[in-house]
Amino acid sequence: MILTDKEILAEIVKGNILIQPYDRSCLGTNSYDVHLGKHLATYKDAIIDARKHNEILHFEIPETGFVLQPATLYLGVTHEYTESHAHVPFLEGKSSVGRLGIDIHATAGKGDVGFCNTWTLEISVTQPVRVYAGMPIGQLIYFEVKGDIENLYNKKSNAKYNTRTELPVESMMWKNQF
Image 1 (cartoon, rainbow, N blue to C red):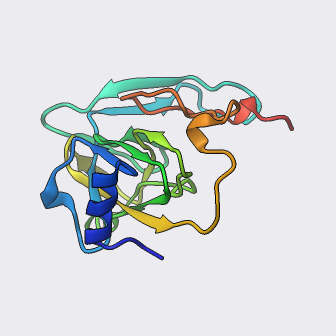
Image 2: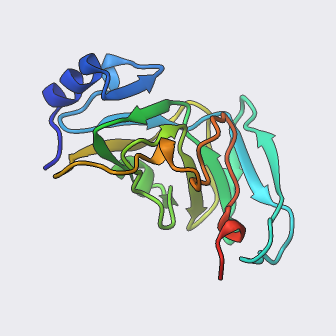
């Protein structure tokens, strides 16, 4: 079941959901709008290898915006830091962003209960699009969970994305055994 605006507010009061910075005007009927942070990154190498630690190059979006190009994967980050201690957060693109031809995640739209961090965005575009730091980029939707949780994400010793950051984070696939 998806939490409504009143339920999201109640869970914020209980401390089960944290959004920093929080702006009441960003709360929708059943979601919370998040914004593009000021940092983007691209992979350094033209060929990305799933078995190695691929380096990324970070840069800031200038005041005048930055033009995203097709055929390039950009890693972005949400301006908001979030915590979810009792619900499964899903990050979805806003329809206005999709109508600009911007996809904000390739596959990783679901967080885990216990996820505490900014969200790295996997951004791709269908045609050149100028983006700006602080623009609305997505919306968080919170789902109820059924049953007790044995292992919260922020308590897992093998969780790869637990270090708090304001920068986009590259793939940690290389840490898996395959």
